[in-house]
Length: 234
Image (cartoon, rainbow, N blue to C red; front, side, top):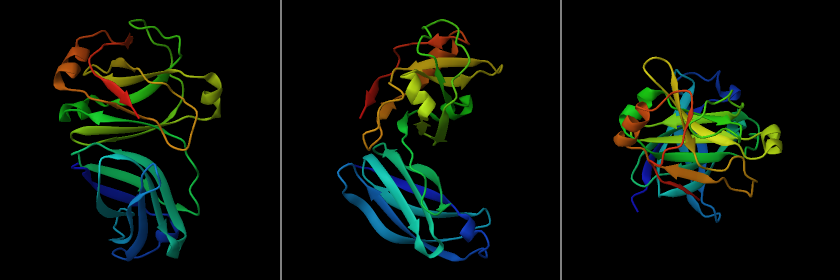
């Protein structure tokens, strides 16, 4: 398996912000798979730069992982989950926090897409479960989302809060912008939110130029439900 090369940008915690630029900082980075096996478990050094970030790099096989970063000297930490698409290098950003980071329970979505996809300003929104295909959408339901786009792939974290869990599963849609400022909404046929069992569900789907061209010809402001990509979960 090819795996991927990861460039991880670490936002500095408050305890590091008064350090002079070019100060060397050592972080302990762990990358752990679902059965608790570490694929990376080592100290990695980086220089504090002028943008209050540091960069470490590593290689990891294809799969779903938990990330743990600790900088004991300054009492700063980060943790997250991420997915590696085989053969697709990726850039990630994580914020170090002073003290233990808050636990989060995301659902992950990711897949491959052409470079043109980035210029459509893709975001991911949530609508009421009763929203019907090819019918106008209502106001989106508020949900915390984190998005990272690379040149050939995309990665999404969606974080349900207690109010969303109480509502039950709703409808996820990919929102892409038209040149006139309108929006297409494409249903993602995946459950959200789902009960947490210690690891996130990971939804994967692929978009190609043909799919994007097809979406661009469809009506805006309605929930599109095309069968133009395959979705898998794990």
